[in-house]
Length: 460
Ligand code: IFM
Image (tube, rainbow, N blue to C red; front, top):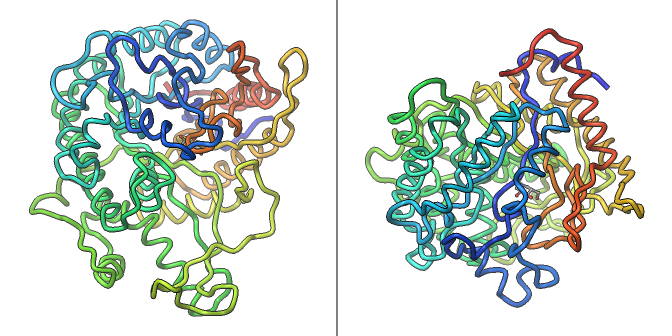
């Protein structure tokens, strides 16, 4: 199916991340990451699974790039494993680790596929976590050094650089509720992590801009949430304000406007937390962005009352609760709300005015594979139809949308959920490592082709 609104100057891609697909965690000098450690904590990951082998992508680059080329997309978004490039998070580059990404980039370019690099998709070198992790300011400087090494190695061929993927997850899932690595549970530490992730982004962006010659597209990817008040009550509007503040504005306001939102810092102060801002930090963080990456999966109706109608929880904090839309759900138990994506993009356009690209969108469903590996995933195809349609609707409404990357190219290691949740448009049989393009992957490839044919040009 064609999406005429997306026919011109629009980038089509597929996305993955290092720890979720590479495997080869002990090879060629790679050091341990916080996810290698976390996966060994009993009960941390469903089934005690880990990324030791994952999709074995480290050993299958030619075959995997063939699959990407076969889908007909123009761009492949992947992340670099910091502990492959700089095993302990400090010091010189590890030549063997760099060589892997050299090969990957060259193989992509040979096939006419544009590499889109994410520098950090959650695999922090364990040694840096041992030294304090993202709540410690020094990690931001270490990240900038790593970004410089990565750019020195690949910046002659790679135009598109994303600093961080979803800093909300790194900070909140990693340091506040502990369901992701490194598994800490300390709200104050999580807020310090937010600031140091943003500072790391700004420092890394400056290093890349200083060194880069030729065309450059530099950005950050956020998993901004779309929140609407469940009702028009004051409590629900207040819950929406709080949720939006901690999910969206605490990142976007410093990145774009060079300040933390006052209502959010007041809420934090009431909880005894101050953002660890030093002189000059906000100027570094708010250096211009070329593009904002958006990862979207669902939307949220915010309620400010609990099931009994109370507006304050046992912890003394205002109640902020998501209540269902009553929509069908994916295997992640996430409600399917495609129009929320149009609304989110329109709001971000109005409030922040940056060009945007969907760096992730997709769905896990309980796939049933036939004997030959094929998967008739009409549910995933329907999800993609509706969400790409939602991007088209935003573009038609005047939002500056530059592209769409499906999450994910492959079924892969879904963090604390292990391998049971399958997001791929390509199935991976983890016993044999056989890849099979699912029906949704074939639909995606056809739609990219038909959409391009409906226009006259494509993104370069
Ligand atoms: O698999 C993750 C990805 O690593 C980051 N964004 C959300 C995806 C689905 O949970």
